[in-house]
Image 1: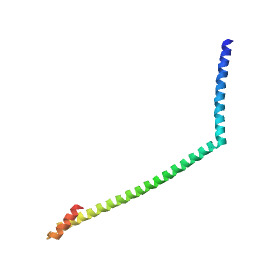
Image 2: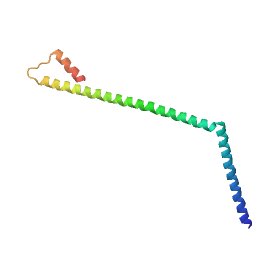
Image 3: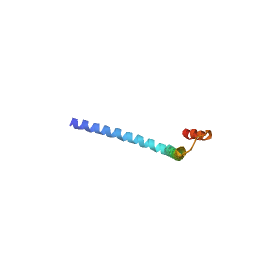
Image 4: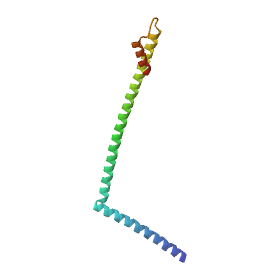
Length: 116
């Protein structure tokens, strides 16, 4: 019987402690709500979320601009490669003609084509 009573006393003490901890938390929460701290915290959190959303939108816009720039640069690179290829083909055609002699002005064109 003593063991059973000791066990009950321990259980009652544990439940009292748990009750008091829950009561203290609820009282604190109620006081914060009455003071407006809880609502202020939510508004502050929402402002932070909105700021983060705006930051994400700005970064997405920056990413789109960079993607467009990459496409533009790739297009320019393709056009330059195509132009160089056309110049090489033209040079081959001109140098393979019979009776074609390189004079000074034409050799300058050849040098420019090789640089490109």
